[in-house]
Picture 1 (cartoon, rainbow, N blue to C red):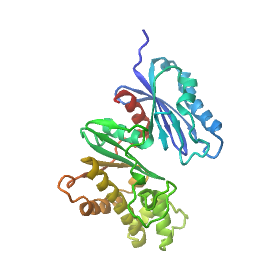
Picture 2 (tube, rainbow, N blue to C red):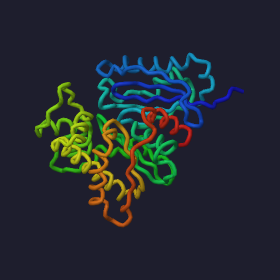
Picture 3 (cartoon, helix red, strand yellow):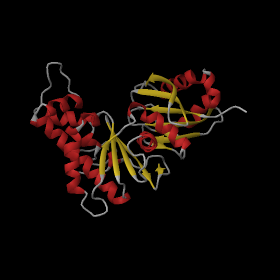
Picture 4 (cartoon, rainbow, N blue to C red):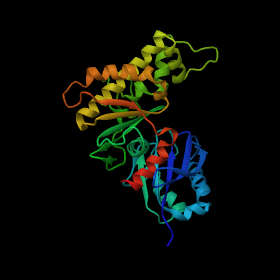
Length: 309
């Protein structure tokens, strides 16, 4: 009988499609990657998915694969097996699960949102390990998240539970593409941190870099406008985390993604604001820490969703 000790994993985002084989200890054994042709039609995008999976399927280790886990930019609809990523316009209600079966055949497939995948990874191998109740977040081009409740991944019926980026923290704030106003994502994502700083008078250095990372570097150097943009982002994240903790009693919030790489420029104002927002006895003392699983979080989490439920 053929061993099925490996799980295939897909991490699908607006810039890259990553595929991997992951063992039962959470180690990536093989990997493949393709750029996401996000501006092209849906068939071109699924073609890139097939190419990444096909590269792995051509290897002898593929015979040991028992299932496929997919963490995708969303929204996703796990019950229907479809995806409609905001940053991949060619996919609207796209039947992703059906189409990946062209490569994986009859193997079981589980689809979850990319934030849920990060939560699965951090609970299995990262900073939320040992916690029964956790919120794990990705703060990058967007803001996503996932929940672990009662020691188990809580993806929700559609696979999107824990999507903290679309909690409103400013009812009179900017209109969000989701239809809400003042969403966490409209304040704390990398592009919005940078645009806020630019609008308030911050200017990039000689290299012209206007990314959130450049704003963070200026904040560390003492630029007050850059620092204020991160303080505002930290407050938005703190408000969303406090609201989530009040509803779910999570004991830890784990934050990863490119914006989290700013370090204490982000985490210091976030923790100070959280002390103001999380004042009820059952949410005080909430731990906030950086993620540990790094760039492989989506792949490890997609595998974990299959292996650990």
